[in-house]
Image 1: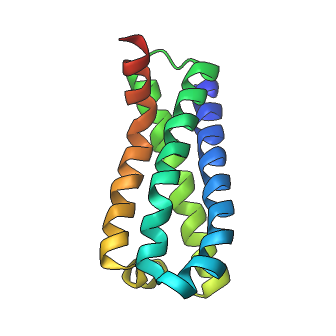
Image 2: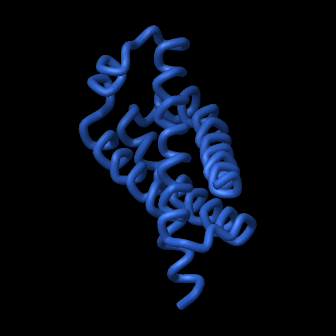
Image 3: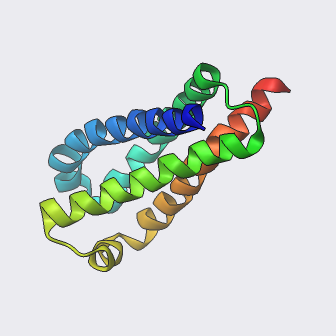
Length: 132
């Protein structure tokens, strides 16, 4: 269980750090020129690459053997990511969770939701394709 928890924490940290760094470029440079929707959509393929590579690394490094453990890695990481995102929205923008969700662009927000589901599922999926 400790190995699964560590794997979830590392998976979260890798993806969160990459998203934070990309956000430092996206918000001041791309959003004013392209708008929120296109700037966020432009970032999505890069984040997908980060998610795939991070999941591969975590599964190889921590070797959660049972599919439930691999799924738990994704759920732990997703829980940490959602908590961090809502915390940053509250601290930096003064938004409640409901206000933050309502402020999302409908198109890029829907794609982001899909990316969150992929993020949670990727450790399980990466393991299966690596073994096949």
